[in-house]
Length: 313
Image (cartoon, rainbow, N blue to C red; front, side):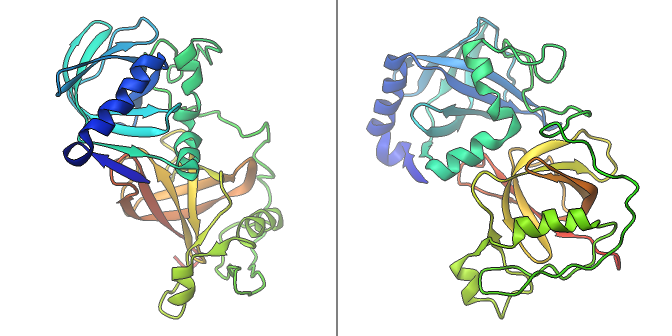
């Protein structure tokens, strides 16, 4: 990820913003609320005002409803992101401060960014077609929706929830090899089918070179999953709806995924892992959030590190 700073690359940043203005392509802007909701507006960058401000206009005729907190921007056509704050709003127009830095994102980072459920709906907001589910209060168009789907009835790929009556308790251990991860812990209510699903996820992931080097010093070596892997996660008390997140890494004792809100998860809370991609587990895997760390320099994404809960805990 390449970073251009206002201090050292002001002219380059101006050129990039000018390209967007001239192209007429919309840019996605959003704001995160304390609740974890995401308010989205597709916008046009209209002009640069002096050296310190950029004029915006909503791309769907709605009025801005942002507050004074940070606003994030993603130019999908030019593959860069930045954040800034507003200086003024007036109906469907706004002025924002010139960004302190712009970050160019590569293919992998773009995939992670767009795998977020909210961001995967951007085209519907930008172009005004495929208006999504108008009956879902979190997925309305015209910029008034929150765009990160929080549907309590969300199902993945049309699958059901598996066999709720399966009460099998079992131990599962994959074969040991240089680039494989052994799954030796005992998970509550892990059915044979769940074990097969999990084994498929962890059996052929590659260990980082750093982890191979320090394998004798780490209790649980990290490993990178295939590109585009996602999880469906819900809080342990099921008080919040299920939500999909990009999978970041796997280990013997846990995993990590990416979230856009720093306050979406707190260290020590219990979560339920409901699916790997479209594969719905018979029984959710229980994990405890151990860390919430910034995953990029702009503070756009956060890595949620989790430890699987065993029968002994």
